[in-house]
Image 1: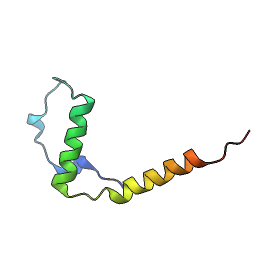
Image 2 (image 1 turned 180 degrees about the horizontal axis):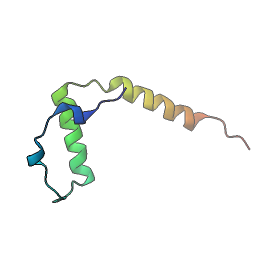
Image 3 (image 1 turned 120 degrees about the vertical axis):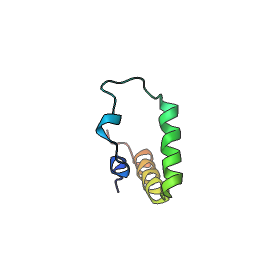
Length: 65
């Protein structure tokens, strides 16, 4: 499943700055992501469950020498 967040908004070309004026740190990006998930009512449970299952499989897989 993929979500194209770019498709959510339209921005007039004159509103886009010609160069970067700053950047968001990891925490700010995490907060924005959390707010988008809440606002758009996105159910992340199936994705997270799948990722946890995949990780557990990797961690519990017998090592081969």
